Image (cartoon, rainbow, N blue to C red; front, side, top):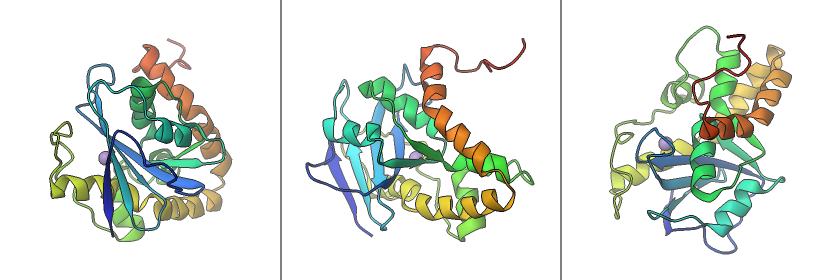
Length: 204
Ligand code: MN
C-alpha cells in the first residue's frame, strides 16, 4: 500500500478509472465555517492519493474534472457531507455518486450502527482505527498516523459497495438505493443553501 500526498490538486494525467472512492477531511463539521483540508481518493487498487487543499484555495481543475465527470462513479461513505464540502470549496457538484452509508441504512435494518469502521468490520472483517478522526487536518505537514487514517477511509469502499450491493439485491432495495444516490448531490446542495436540518418532504 502506497499513500501519495499531493498539494492543491491531483497530478496531470493520473487515471483512477471509472469508479473512484473519495473522502474528505475538514476543520470541522460546519461546511461554511470549517474549511476543506484534504481530499482522499482511491481506484480500489489498494493505493490512496491524498490531496492537501490550501486555505483560501478555490480551484483544483484535475480534481473537479473527476468530480463532475458523468462517466466516473464516485463512492463515498456519508457522501452528503463530502459533496457539500467540495461544492463549498470549489463550486463543483459531484455526480454520479454511490454512498455506502445510505446503502447500509436501507439494508442493515437490524442495527443503528452505520459508521464506516463498524461496516468494514462486519462485512469485510477489516479493522480500521478511527483514532485520528478528530485531529488538526489543517496542519501544513500531516503525520504518518493522519495519512494512514485518511487513506483507510477510501481503501475499502469498493469492496464495501460490492458487499452492500449483494444485500440490496437480495432484499429488493437496489432501485430505492439508486434513487437516493441520484438525489444525494442535490441534497448536499440544499444543506449548503440553508436547509441542513429540515426535511423538505415533511408536512410540518
Ligand atoms: Mn475520513
